[in-house]
Length: 368
Image (cartoon, rainbow, N blue to C red; front, top):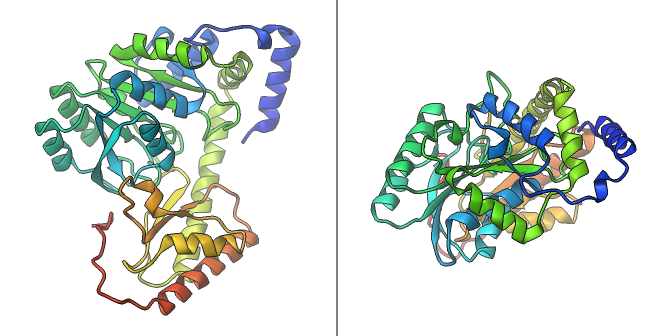
């Protein structure tokens, strides 16, 4: 992350506006940032004005506000499965039920299952990560994104979209957002620069379409405003022309690190291991044989100061116990290489020692 440049820009802002950090802002947020976000959203396929953008404290807050604006406690929201546990916690905090829909690492959420849920009037909203999702790394093609938006529009169902990983594509051009195909204001687009510039500055935004007034009111109720200096710092970085150069370097680094970790999986893990092959982001989803327990791996790995994320926490129903997520965001080193060797040893040991009392019914595989 470009911390030195961000620190310099922040210092300049504070020197030139010594009292600005202590002033209230209005809920929409700083105009310079909203202007830059609107300009960048053109690459996503969205034509919006700065007045249509609400700044938030990261994507987490924008998703929370968007979900709250379109639901009531007890409602059911359709989600891809598996899904980021942080987002599942948001659903739980809002007292919402999750309808898990099968999701393929390449093709994304199952359209037949989504259509069946819509026909049965089972859901009041849908939540999807549009590009390089957490944890699968899924990135649907434009045609399917358009089809999903048209399907939800037909049933007048809002879609809360998280596009936090969209800038981290490895090849080609920046993938579009669901919002690019929204003609009725039903897509609430949420994103931030937490994965590309600074997680700690907590600068995100929401383009809420027809729900903008509700989201802005909720923002005012929850915490009134987003801190001004972080907004201006990100705006200055975007305006100085260095963001695209930074992204090129970041994407190359993430792609190289993901390749190295995938090679290590092939070298150190059992031969029947399955692993995703995302075209962006920095996450890998690993699937082991049905009898494997990733929670046991998690506990054993911690004894070696190695952290993996067990698959069951990515599902409200506790599925995917034989899966886990790896983060490839750290620069490759011999320490990480040794950690992968250790993980391979722990996995092979667990599978070798596993004594089954009864046949195991395999859970559904996301790779089918």
